[in-house]
Length: 287
Image (cartoon, rainbow, N blue to C red; front, side, top):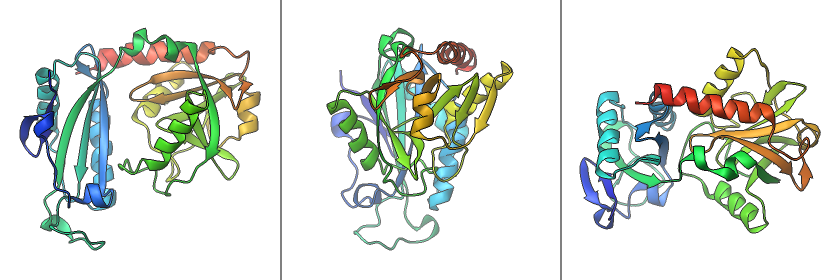
């Protein structure tokens, strides 16, 4: 059965969903997005994703104010219409269609934003053995623009990096800038050394992960020490454990980098523990 897609107030079959070729999201990547994970037909961390979406819109000056109740209703309708049990709901908001291609865009609400939502089914992460057995990552230079804190659709470099990893026999790429890890292609990166969680501090250099924020809160609740600072590739190789977090993978152990085992080359106990805690706590708060 064809998916139902939301386009500017209408629910339509995916083969009927269209956006103008002059839309700035298409010609300029002038758009932001969010993805809310769905487990057991319920949304995980919806509030956080909507708050971050508004921040991204504001940072780009896209004149759209998120109506929480309206967005909640639309997301729930998308779950119902697509019988979504496990996966995610993507929302993309562009600056809109100015009628022609131009670098210059009008201020304020002179252009009506384009709003698109679609669902994507994915295996239940609780039953995904690859996520629990751990990923092998490689490294590449981080050549993205320097406003990575804004969740834009400018995903070309992460896409190239992810593809390079898979084609080289790895699961993902950790990107490196000035000798330190920034993040994965679609996830925040962490190492654990002597029981201390080390992860890069929030800045323009990385996405302000919603899963990241919750994970660190759960770790603090368990009296784990956290250091928010950059770390090097050599530190990763000398770490006891490593892992990533994201809305779609939750907490996933990293067991090697550039062919070098991290710790004993098996998923770390802390990473697996935090993964289980995150899933349990998220389900409790799911809506």
